[in-house]
Length: 97
Image (cartoon, rainbow, N blue to C red; front, side, top):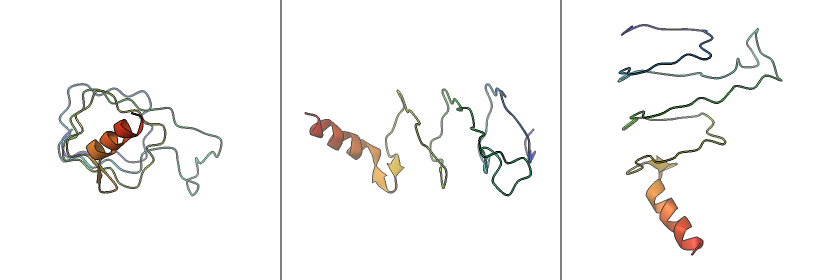
């Protein structure tokens, strides 16, 4: 599927295992926006699950990470709004004693 483009698709419950996604551009993911004919203000997207995904050098921009949990992941060099996550975690650890 290299070079393919999927547009306006419902990929609910899709499982991708063992794929190489280098260079992929994934955008506008979630429920249909208010301007879309299938918009439903009561609809809520079910959570996505990423396991053993190597996202080194990747960028997440302009989305929602509300209630996201990151567990047992290498965070070296990861930044949130320009702040190193390692430094944030160090400061948090000091604050709780």
